Image (cartoon, rainbow, N blue to C red; front, side, top):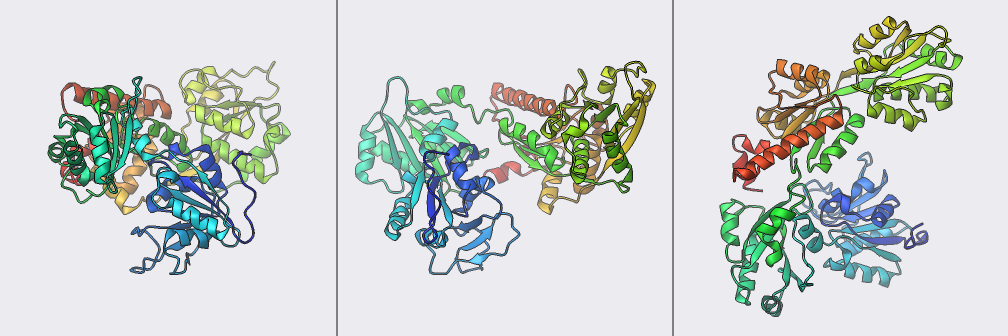
Amino acid sequence: MSPTALPAAGPEHGHVTFLGAGPGDPGLLTLRAVEALSSADVLVAEHEVLDVIRTHARQGVSVVQTDADPSSVSPPGTGTPQLTVVDGTSTPAAVPAAARDAAHLVMEAARGGRRVVRAVSGDPGLDTYAAEEMLACAAAGVPFEVVPGVAAAVGVPAYAGVPLRGADGADVRFVDARTASERCWTEVGASDGTVVVSTTLDSVAAAAGELVSAGRKPDTPLSVTIAGTTTRQRTWTATLGTIAQTLKQAKVLPSPDGGRPVIAVVGERSSAARRDQLSWFESKPLFGWKVLVPRTKEQAASLSDQLRSYGAVPHEVPTIAVEPPRTPQQMERAVKGLVTGRYEWIAFTSVNAVKAVREKFEEYGLDARAFAGIKVAAVGEQTAKALVAFGVKPDLVPSGEQSAAGLLEDWPPYDPVFDPIDRVFLPRADIATETLVAGLIELGWEVDDVTAYRTVRASPPPADTREAIKGGGFDAVLFTSSSTVRNLVGIAGKPHNVTVIACIGPATAKTAEEHGLRVDVMAPEPSVHKLAEALADFGMKRRVAAVEAGDPVTRPSERRPGARRRRSTT
């Protein structure tokens, strides 16, 4: 147990955790924050903060939204916060209209012994109202704890490649431009240390002017970062005297989003020359790329995680739905045959095949022990991992190409002296090719080729996703099989010609070209992870070429007609 963990909430007063959600990257949540969220009964937070924390909350946790977001379930025009449920299955339960400020919301939520997480952006110690809410808890006898978070004034510069201090131990001042007094500006203007200013996009120039008036030189370097620590992050470098012109030339201002918060860092450490070397986040190979992942949700998870590590924003669109076979009797006989010793081998060619057999095992009350005495083969790293998770270590995984042909390369021929049984159980999809079956028969084996699951075309994605696919809203799409090409085009339309098309192999690329798509990237071997690596290499080469040519680094989607005009308003 964490040394900070408190006893169970009391039956009358409950318990409140004031939690810092950090500046925007969910990966910056602390271990203690995740622990608190997993046991919370109620979450109280603003809309953007909820997006950061809700994935760590348990199913059925109630949510109280403290800001008037358009997606709120409150009745139009009332401004009354309401309780909703993360899984979206329950009806909202209204919070009394009198409980409109956050302190009252927290108190109301804590009643009845519930555990409440009051999450704020950044760190609770720097939040304008958190201390008042803590005092209210203390006055009401509600026990509370504080879980610190990464403050935006510290986290955002780190992601922007702007270290605040060095070996010289220079002074660092933090200023909130919204509340800074004239005396504050005078003090930081007289200092030669680093100044971190929390302000808004349309107020940056005014803050720069305050510093110049207070004594800072107009040629002092300045960096401005918006949406820091997220894949929407953008940073501009200039000087105190030129920042207004820089933002205007970049068509960033004027903008209807000028009120968005930014972090500005003033001082030599924010110079453009230093950022060229230290900008680790925005220089990721696929930074900000919106990548379409047309796979089943279970299959897409690890691929999406890999894409995020390259700075991309994966968007999963299921193109294939997996369903049980129409006649389950064949599968039932085969699984029973495993137990009775009918087979020498079982070969899994996909994660879905492992899942189908595992579900059938669980239906009969069996577990991995039923594989005792049977040799197990697996095609692909993910299939092998699924087996290990089931408690089965594969005896054979292709040493070369992860495919049916690769498996046949390593499969031993049947030997009546050493193999007491000559039969192989092959659970697979209804649309699988006959390559593996024919190859095993040629090696002398008898094969029970069993339909373990059916693959059918998934339902069309939402209208806005279909429009983004056809209109060039995606920067890249990853095709992992010919069926994903056919199904995506069938349910959503053909991707726009500015979208980078990446295919897992020659057969998939051929199908894409048959559908009128230009293939830009192909994996060096048939692996989803090698495909993601190949796309990242493509993105990095594209970035390097733009930098060497002195051109701005843009995403493929920004090349479509009207994209630059739309981007200027964000």
